[in-house]
Length: 259
Ligand code: F6R
Image (cartoon, rainbow, N blue to C red; front, side, top):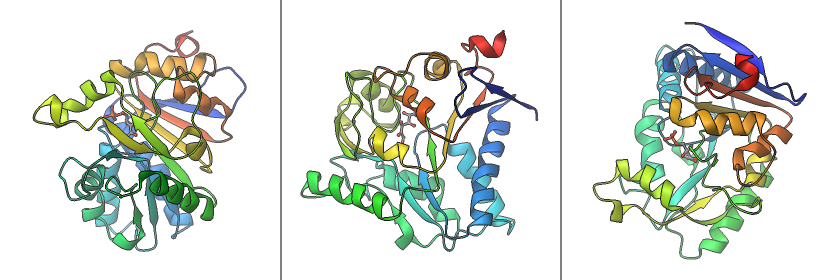
């Protein structure tokens, strides 16, 4: 298990940890989250779905089972949810969180928040979600994955950064990428409710995890490219406390790292 720190040479507050395996990456990410919960038992965690953080969640479950972590007072806010979708649907992000984390740790489900993909008034659902984030003063730490095109949450490459929680039309590439979880591509919802980049930037700390060659370009653009809404994750260069944990394959495009 080895890992090496790297900074992108831009003088900002992004720290990058390059790990020798997905297992190391997951253990390191879980260690950061567990540290926060141990210091602040009622910590507010911003969470993500997708394959990248699954190993991290497994490590958190192990720590909980070993009695080293207590979720009883933890509150969580997820990044996004498909729309329209019922939270009970086994393709919903709410369901994903239950089967990959919540059902296996001692969290009080009343403290779990996932955007409502089934709300009758979606605009109000977005406003209410953003108001909740404001009320808590931003999550203590936001876990993120990253899309191959640099998206975070469901904030796809665009001409402008969208600030608050909003409804998103999914791009063809995201529908394609997500279709691996559905029987047929026609079953993939075409919309989602997502925290905006502004909502994400309200987090006190950000922890992005990424692995595999498919993420190499997005990681290089995010860290070493310009800040542009064409690479939504590049906005993280402006955040005051970001840790990005990746494997060697995802680090392959980093010029500074390989210099
Ligand atoms: C998930 C999310 C997405 C994923 C991204 C990477 O809540 O917001 O931005 O983090 O699509 O997905 P994976 O990890 O499956 O490659």
